[in-house]
Every structure is written in structure tokens, then in C-alpha cells.
Image (cartoon, rainbow, N blue to C red; front, side):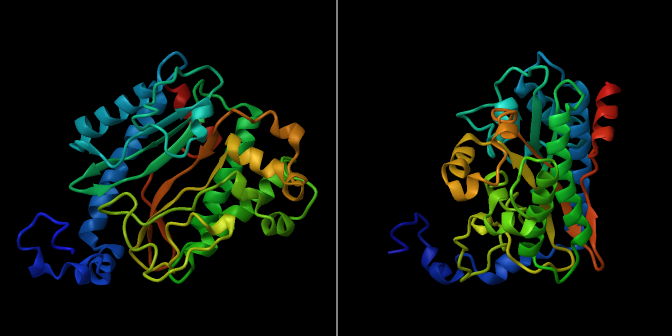
Length: 328
């Protein structure tokens, strides 16, 4: 049956059902060699510089695809990275709430408007090895108070995970840590209400605003293999249902750290439709954010013997981003 479904006349020699996705091949891609790390560091350095170049060149009146074009030209002309690791995601305004925007059905074609937040998720690829970096910033170069509030909540979650990563820790625990930190921030600023952080976590309120996993393994693929062990049963809990990595971390694993906060209309309607969850959301304050998109901050990291090395070198604080854009 397997042989009939495949065109290769010698496929029977492979004993295909036994070797398909073999754990040995999968595990060989999970822990990186020093040569692999050298390549990953280089393509991250190149892609980081390309992101900074985009920040400096974008202004209101351009199109989303100008960011994609600038990025791809930079990584090719400055580092020989002919290919991108995945289709560039350049979502402004409401489009920033689409987790995988930029595909053929939504091809980065919106006009960039003054006051929009702009989420750029782009990575170059070199010799088969990928990068995956996301930067979020205002098109006009200056964060509004509301944009800053959301951005700094995501940055707190990102930085808390970066400080906690080391060999032996569970990436599931890192995911939950990012949710807890974001929940605490949104509670302090009044978007969440009527409960403690523990109560909000128990009701998974943050998962309506951060509906994806913390990150994934990466290397030869952007979403590389090995993050979900054979036999793992995916959780039915909303906050844990979208994980791409559930392993304990080991030295020389390469992963992304990419928390986010988005205002996705379908998710907003879902959290407000249930009185049990709706009471935890300040609907008056939420109305200011509906349709504004979202924020994601994504870095590529190497687990070291004692902690973590961040390979993505881009402006991260509000002050760093604004200073970079003002230099343009």
C-alpha cells in the first residue's frame, strides 16, 4: 500500500513505514553542533540588521510590501541569503492581529497609515538554516500611550522567559510564565479586572489575547522537528492547546521566544460571550483596542550551559525603537 502511493520504484528498499519520521533523525536536529550554531548566528545577525533597515525606511504612506521588499533585498545583497525562511508577515493596523498574515490571500498589501502599529515577522535563510525574528513598532516612529502599554506587557513576558531559560527547565513552564507575566501587566493597567492573577490564569483569560505557543525549535526548518515527542497527547486546555514545543530544554537547543498580545475579533467575541470570562475584561477599556492589531516580540535563542544566548540583535525597548526610527 505504501509502495503504490509513492512513485519511486526502489521505495521498498527503504522500509518506509519504519523510517518515516524516525526518532534518530528527529533527535539529530534538536541539539545543534557548533558549525550549525555558527550559521544560525550569522543568519540572525544578517536578519537583525535587515529588520533595523526596515525600521529606518518605513513611514506613513508606504505599503506593507515595501517592508518585505526592503528586508529581502537587504539579506540577499548584504549576506547572500537568497531565500527567506518563510513568507514575510508584514501586518499593519488590524492586519497585525492575523498570526500568519502575508500569504497569497493577504499579501502585505495595506497602506501604512499614521498611528498604525506594524508587526514584521521576517527571517532570512542561508545554506538551509533559518532565522525567525519579529519586531513590532509604530509606523510613525512614536508609540502612543495605549501602544506602549501593550508593547511593554509583551516585552516583560519576553524578558521574563529569557531570564528563566536554562538547561532542565520545561518549555511548557516557560510558556505559562509568559502568560502569567502578561496577565499581571494587563491587570495592573486595568484591561483585566475583577480577579487575582491566579484567578485569571485559572480561567485562561490571557489565552484569548495570546492564542499561540511561546515558541518552537528551529534550524533547518523554521518550525523544526522534535518539539512534540512521539506519543504526546495535546492538552485540551485553551492556554496549552497550541504549543509547538513541550520538552525540557537542553544545551545547544535553538528555539524562538515569541509572546504576543493581539486584539482578534473572533477571540474577543468568544471571551465576552461567556459571562464567566467576560467579567474579567474591562470592556470599556477594550473598546479602545479593538481593530488595532497586536504586538509580537520574537527572538531566536540558544540554550547555553547556564542560561541563554539571544542571537537576535534588534531594538527592543520603546526608547531604543523610537531612537532608531528617528535616526532615519
